[in-house]
Length: 152
Length: 396
Image (tube, rainbow over all chains, first blue to last red; front, top):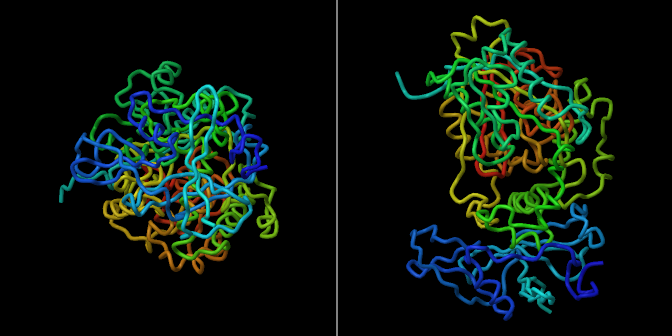
């Protein structure tokens, strides 16, 4: 059963891999900020282009000087899919579940993947305004995912 | 004019295939499948397999040229090429790479092949359980952390998001996807080699099939198969001396538009097959247009991807998809544009689209089980929505 009704209060059950900050340190700031319930996006210090997923170089101006900017935790539903076939044993109890692609106009229209909270069978409308919800995963190596929901 | 081009300088002169098996059911080792396909291609061409002096592959095939050459006792190898990246998007590119090698004088007879026996390794369609648990498998590949924890990790998941946006932007209804699946299964009924031969489907069965990931039902997704297929590329001069009708390589193109795919759905041209520019260069090299094409093999990993390939190769505009992508138009023998005429990845077998290439050759030879009368221009679009992708035009 999906939604906030898994015993841990997470959208998907335990057993999926935890996000792993890149070994070369590239995206550690994103995951630290998420744990603090802040949404940050990589932004070039030279040309101010937002960039996602993080990379060492700005794809627009080729500067290696990239920072992280906090942005409003909101976005627009750009695309979606409803997964029915459990192609990993961890999600077998959780299907169907919703994956969304969320565009952030306040961050140069970068797009992030997440889950859409709530009824997994809900009608999904492209263009819906969404709010982020930070989903804590406690444990010996805690992490926080950025999820999405329709505002009340 | 001595423009630098491979157009018209090479031809496919031999094709070889193993039997097709459902995934994991090959009774033979994967390497044996590769050897069989390669030796059959040589036999089909009327060559001694030891005439092969070049080997080209794609999709990080496990069967390395050094091992193949040594196993067959090939006297010499002058070209050894793996097309870099793009998985099933690389089949046409591998043909183009072989053609370039022949045209440049590197080698005389280049075999291009693909061999897959998944049960011996792992299933393509499942999340790679081991990899997902220990990702990033390749620490130089960013992005896994931003997808897998949200339950996005299998190929169907990756493509469904993009297809959904394409369907939305162009107001495409479900009938187009259904038509593609039905045409493939229809063609498989004529093809005794096809794994779905004797297993036709109706629209009702298509509509009643379970969702895999919306917008893909079971019958919107290709099979997973074991098998191998190979072709031999040589110069047009040598081709004319061999026993088969040559399938001349009129055009081959590979590549990608800007920032496609690699940035985890952050490409500016999102709802795209990534084939617009490849198709432009393909037609420019070949000197033909979409309207000149008699028969199409368009990589059907998912029906939605086929629609996008057809649009970006100019067969219909996005706003024409609903009226163009019909069973009537896409099915042999009466369709305007017969599509995936041996059953495709969906209904013949899934050897990463290499069986689409052998079928495209058969259409030129006149030996297809769904032979388009007078087929003279035969196009293959390799996998859409990958970076890089590729496509190919053969002519008689």
